[in-house]
Length: 417
Image (cartoon, rainbow, N blue to C red):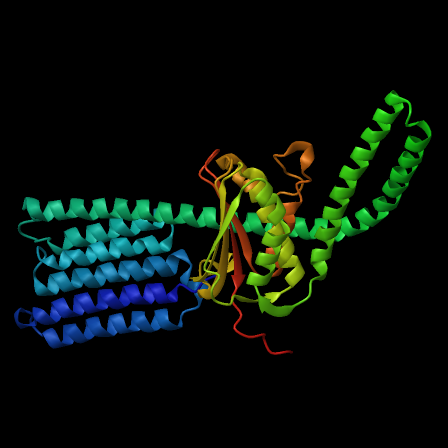
């Protein structure tokens, strides 16, 4: 959990400066002002020292947070009473206190503190002989206080909702990583076990074709068997590749090498369909640490997906850039790190928004019997194993897709040990 003491400390420091400056500015009209100023200073200093040293778990409790804000409201009210200026601009201090209650991340606590602060503000203008202030401007300020309290509540709800969505996304990514890792460990064993029987079926089918190939009906069925076996062999090969990811090696190399290797491997298919591949940002070296062949496979799978999704004669764009970015698994409090981003963009059929979250699911494919649904899953697992990420973006059907690789930028290999 991120330590939030600094946030509370800054808030309390700002409030301290505002109140003490206001008091000091009006000191000439205050009897025995020096003693009262010292009392306020000590009270705020003690609150700052407490925030500086308090344990994060203790700070998270309702009692401590409520005590902090209510003591601030009392000190602000004392300042108004001592300066005898309940109608002055110092009422803005209450705005700050009520806004600060959003730090509690609890709406009930926030409104309770706002209620007490408002009551304290009203009491500062109490006169035993005249009662409360009759001026409309004084009460209008109270309305403003509650408008601000409601606004702070809305901001708090929005922040909590955003945080929940972010955490939900991170948890989904972790579950996806665990799922892919489990499939990877199992896939190698399954593939090796099935590969032998499939080879036997394929050989026997060839023998039967040689013996009975003259009979059209039998030949058609045997060729159908051959086709299905070949399809199973493709799936098995994908499973074997997925299993090999768990045994990756590490070396320092230039990311541009596997990217250009993947483009070259698909060059004939690009040329046959008149697909133009353009590059940008490939002038400078792009050092990464990991497995060269696995990153080649990840880029190849994404490029192949872009080629299959693109109409004839359309462009595919490769962009490479260096950015400062927080890792997805520590996006809230982690320090921004130098990362390489490789973007593969096409203008093909695009992806429906409801299917974006499923793109990397194992065995999910929109190509029917033509695909195994393991290519993009393997690419994501490869990026995860490299402490990176693979994200997909699309504006919808017919509007193309963008796949963005993120990898740590390594200026030199880390020291051994």
